Length: 71
Image 1 (cartoon, helix red, strand yellow):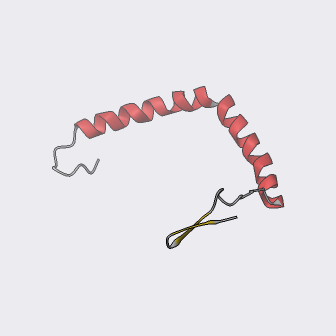
Image 2 (image 1 turned 90 degrees about the horizontal axis):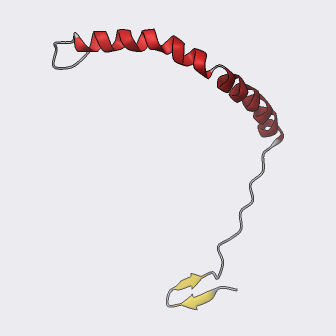
Image 3 (image 1 turned 120 degrees about the vertical axis):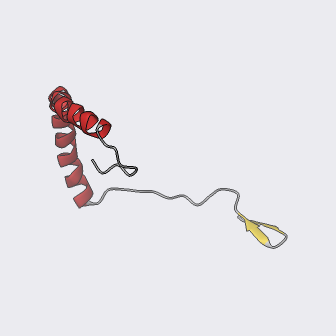
């Protein structure tokens, strides 16, 4: 039951909100779990693949001489 305090009605407890996944949400969750598992299993391969790219980016950015880097 709300309390009246001046011009405001104050609730003793905030309204309760319950969330639930729809059927589509549940189906998506199944696919997301599989994608996350694949990502975790291949994390080291991703890191190895990024190393040459990161080195190239570092070399290119150090060669920039403009005031606004565009490399």
